[in-house]
Length: 138
Image 1 (cartoon, rainbow, N blue to C red):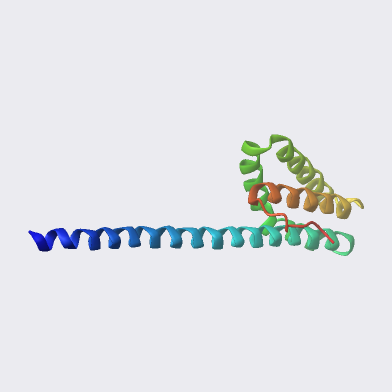
Image 2: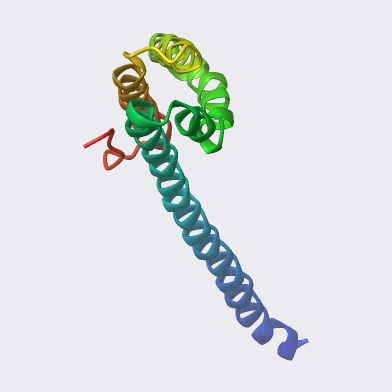
C-alpha cells in the first residue's frame, strides 16, 4: 500500500501535465485559425479591389471576379455580422447590392461602388475577425 501512496503524486503531475499540454495545443491552434481567417478576409477584400479595377476596362472580368471568392464570403459576412452589428451588416448589404447592380448594368460608377463595397467589407471583417490589419483598396 505504501507504493501506491507514493505513486499518487506522480500520476497527479502526469494528469495535470497532459491537461496543460492540451490547453497549449488548443491555444496555438486557435491562434493559427485566427490568422488564417484574417488572411482569407484580406484576400476577399483584395478580390473586390481587383474587381473594381477591372470594372473600368473589362466589366465581364469584374463580374467574374466579384462572383468568385467574394460572392459567398459576402453572404457569410451578412449572416455573421447581423448578429453582432446589424447596422454594419446593412451597410455591407447595401454596398453589395449597389456594386452588383452597377456591374451587371455596366454602369460607369461600378468601379467606385465596388471600391466602397471593398471598404465596407474590410470594416466588417475588422469587426468579425477583431483584426485591425484588414484594409480596403489602396
